[in-house]
Amino acid sequence: MSTNKVACTFLRNGSVARLILCSDHRVYCETHRNLHASTENRFRLQQFNKVEAKLAGNQKPDWNRAVSEAEKIVGYPTSFLSLRWLLSDEIANVALHLRKLVGSNHPLLKTAKSVIFNGRNHMQAWGLIVLLISKAAGHLNVDDMEEDKAAGVLHSQRALAEVTEMIRTSHLVHKGLINIGSGAHLETSELNDMNVGNKIALLSGDYLLANSCAELANLRNQEIVELMSSAVRDLAEAEFIGRRDSQNNPLPSVPSKDCTDYAVEEWTLRNVLSAGALLGKSCKGTLKLAGHSNEIQEQGYNFGKHLALAWQACLDLGPFITKDQSVTFNLCSAPVMFHIEHDPSILTEIDRGLDSVNNVDYTKVREIILMGPGVELTKQLQKRHSQRAMEVLSVFEKSDARTALYNIIAAMGDF
Image 1 (spheres, one colour):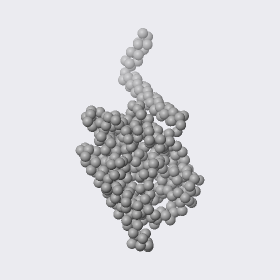
Image 2 (image 1 turned 135 degrees about the vertical axis):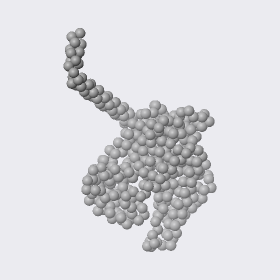
Image 3 (image 1 turned 180 degrees about the vertical axis):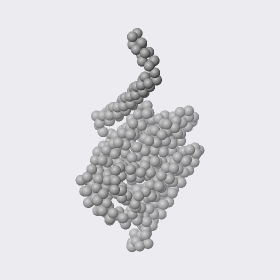
Image 4 (image 1 turned 90 degrees about the vertical axis):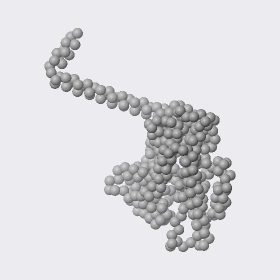
């Protein structure tokens, strides 16, 4: 009772006292909001650490096994290189002409190998990722005729997964074109090989891109067509970022005097355009087809983007952790970019590739980078994007599809 009297007397003393009480109340509320946010962030971090510890405690998922198990979850292999494609007349003709290039140095052969090679850089897993996120999220208010009951995804979502693979593969095939300059001195047989290889790369890439457009049109969804068209635009834009040699191979930009965040910003810009945008927009599109809200669609985009960036960081690390020192690598890969930020003098070696990246002494550049912080910082970058992808997955309910995605992310970081 005496406490109430004191409070009433205090309040009667005027507006100053009321202002003090209101200010204290606001501080109290703000403190509690910050405490709640801090507690929520700690809880999310603990949840992620539990997942990471569980994955680390068990046997590390093998990449091939993780992909194989994931394919079983969505019904069957997702690759457009399925039986219906391999038996088509167009693909048979491409394969026939491709045999003529065996023994030549045309980069199209390397691209063809990477399409079929079932390793960590296996590009056909992209369609698998799209179907797994589709199944993990489920679908809302969709006609039963649209659903593939066995796989638990929509027929339109499976078509979009194939479109994703076709767009990515067509882009990589087109990148296999060689710029045969007027000053090039080649033997007649070698020149013929290069010309044939360029024709196959151009026509094969166009064929895949045209089929992806036809598949998109069959979805009869203008928003999806616009979304995926913007992803194709991003792929094209990525080819004009930064410096290039005569064959359009990328070279790192010269940093400003203040190198702060130079590596992360340039590497992220290049790889969001060349990889993250396509996978991110494909994941967003498949959730749009399933009738999810804009918020969930954006979560899908963030998942695809961060997974693609983690994937690219994983691929960038490969040449620097292998025992084979003769392996060449992308001069705009994350370890190189981080070392440039640490010590820009390495650009002296890299700039020897201004005419052609083949003029660069890769063994020497590799030795310099291994002595710096680039490899370790790339591992941290890969882990950071993997964590962000896993955080997005926590939005979806626990399922076999979500577990399969966790396993694929964990298998990527197995160094």
